[in-house]
Length: 562
Image (cartoon, rainbow, N blue to C red):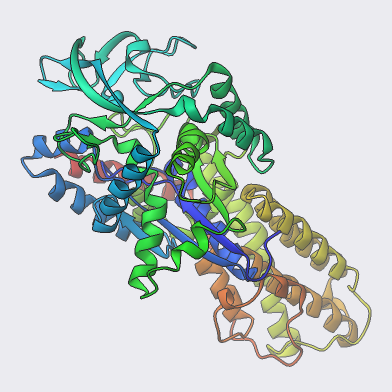
């Protein structure tokens, strides 16, 4: 349970700047992280929330070449676009950085110098796949083939997305170049490797003792450890990246996956440098009491439960290991993986062109794949918004506010009987259950509890019928119903920051709901407080609205492709 003053690092997976994130990326990382941050801040915790753009590697190099621009120009433009997009989604970063930042590049080179000096880096002459057609050594992600473990035919050279196993390109059956599809050939080259097997014992102890890890992260990590760890390549032959600091490694760059995971630390350092407190990052990263939580999709689990902890241990820097990894399953689009090339799914920028941001935040939390892969469909999106957001939540809030104006002139009444007092216990019960779910980062589960409160509120009004009661009895029912609205405004703030603020103002408050504590959900609205004229918070989405949204997204894609 987060306590006042407790230190937290909330860390969202770094999106690759090849293009805008899709809905699955959002709910798996930055949106879920934002919800956690807003909740923790309302609990009084000290929170640092960072992420950034992963800008290096061959995919950016290849795409920039196609467009006739320099990799840094293409990557920087996409970084600024994604950064602005996250602001539109209401993501409350303390620092959204990038792997091209000078702080990051300096930190990575210094970090790997220490890992090298500590004896965890060795060089070796190896055979790597080379595409003769594209005239380049192929990074692991640019080699696809059949997974030797599960038979998945589109596994990458570094990891199978189907079974989650870490791979080496040479393990793939029928490998081929991901750029042109031709079979690559093996060529000899020298590279530097991270001696991961040296840390097998420490990593086993870390995973086994870490009770906070969710089942999917724990089970996948233990399977990888049972298979036995292998050295991981640290360097690449591509030019677009951070130069390797190892003696004799001139012309090599650090493998993008092995440097991007260090961005969590460098972005924290950069944040405090900007604040004029250059040493304060140590208060978080070097304090064993700090809790660090990483919000990722399940495909990123090994890099956060095996690779990153191993690097932190190898550096000898005393960094806190991941306290937990909040890893979601996949959000699918009608049963299929999101694919921009195949026009499957909805992307973060397209979504905001067709419906308000809080509609998306609500729907994505309602569909959050917490225990199994979940389907997004336009029909389900419409159902969630109409039934849950509008008819349940919005309807209850509006009914209470209208009733307050009609019976009590827009002023919070003083309760003058015991009528409806029983509902205070319902508020407390839902609050406690939602709190437990939020503390476990089970946001879908928490939202369900919150919606149960508004549903119970509608039942309260239907059963008590305060519009038919005398003033002394009606006052008590309206008073407790207004308390429920206040509790909803507070508990919904992490999920719906804009809509919760409007609810707060409709209760007559003049400040920001985010400035209040989570526990204040248990305190009623004070009698005598004046309420402004009520306005509906939400509207339903019609079949025609959905049709127009789909058509608009297709227009945007056609315009982008042309």
